[in-house]
Length: 419
Image: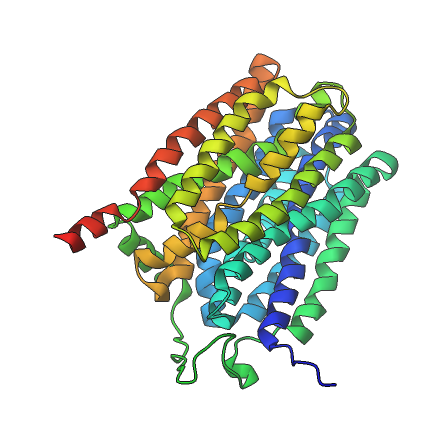
């Protein structure tokens, strides 16, 4: 009995999934450390959140340059260097004594390191290795971040409670360094380097030679070209709100917000991990839908429903888990990064497929700018008003507004073609 040979594209996707899963674990750690660092050093929540805000911001601003660097220096080298930097930054925090140490190490070093992988890594691998099933693969790789949340959050939270916050930093560093040799051994740079064609490529498929170009110049040139397109701004604005309402607000402050209502950190971390469980399902399903439906309509429903759910969040946080809390976790999880597959597809239409990855890099940068503002802004609002309700309401309103604007993407070009 003969078994069908697995196409190497799936191996590349598997290694990418593991790397992104580990990266999500690294990035989920700060939300776990807010309360322990408050207790250990007496630092204000806004000071700790500032470091997280800078981490989120640099994570996004590095992304478009990372996409270009991957074209210039290869994906493998960029990702291995990034993982090494994350390990160094995380491990060095065990010696910090002042808030600016946290900002420099977790904010800057880990932020740049994780940003050099980010979701542009997923987009780069999917675009190089897959012709068919691309939407499904992007959905699966995007879901890796949720899987990392699921695996790391409860464990890291338990470590922080029982062994202190330093154990979290050391665990993150070791996990990052373990991934370096796995990338070196198992991730091939492209189908051409493996002597094959991408998955689903036609018989007459031809790969254009890889262009060696100045990474920074290419990223800036793409930004300048994109800024002339209204669709680029719609995508930038929508993903700004996406980052603000997910990684910046709920991803960073769900645990401390739940703690404010008397819930234990481990329980709150487990709920956030549950969001990751349903995120996997939602994102993969979104990738499948993106291959079959108008991505603009998908984004409309994602943002509208997310906004409505945020209006309910302040009223369903308790000292223990209630049915309404579980319903929110399931729903928000399904919607968490379901926006990514349709957004990536739309990015390829702005300046053409050749520039799609770098365009997405800039759109993703806007995602992280939104996340950065929410990470710090929500902490400021909590200090000012004593709770997170205003932050949740503001984010909900922005999501509802965004649901209208995503429907405008591509309409100008459609009218021009019709004329």
